[in-house]
Image 1 (cartoon, rainbow, N blue to C red):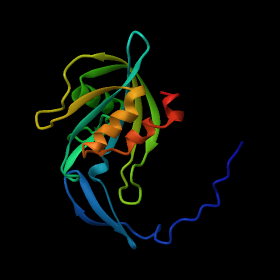
Image 2 (image 1 turned 180 degrees about the vertical axis):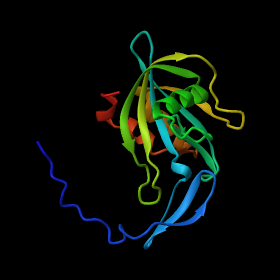
Image 3 (image 1 turned 60 degrees about the vertical axis):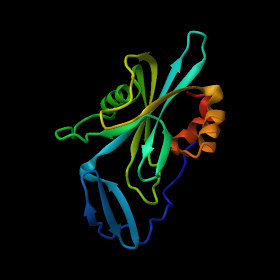
Image 4 (image 1 turned 135 degrees about the vertical axis):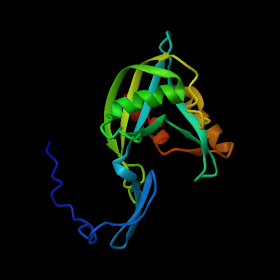
Length: 193
């Protein structure tokens, strides 16, 4: 079946020039016509990782992280993620390279297999940033994780069958949940992990 998407109509401001309002080290604030939005500076992208660990009995777990997020003023439950090419001289870094680095730094796991699931946008009405979503499997625990010196990342290894109740308990405790956790809660997706 071939789908025809040729009849889509762009926003009336789509072809107006993009204007930089402010630029920091990692983000930029921009306008285009009546639209205000932010993006990553210097072409930096992100990699986000669905890390699946399997016990010898076949029980599958997802590796999640949590950390205090200043913009939210609370702790947030997330899948491991990090910036691609954010270090000076790292402009050519591949998403898979960044994902491998971030998975080990944040969680202490190393993956034996990587699958690229595509590029996605988490809040396209406000942020132009895209992220490459990757699935990591055949995991080996090689360290404690926790991130770099200035990060306070907590690692959570959660059985997929208990994920819904884990997230509900997390929310009930007053903490935030990253939107990417939502895809892990759908029955259709769980069957494909």
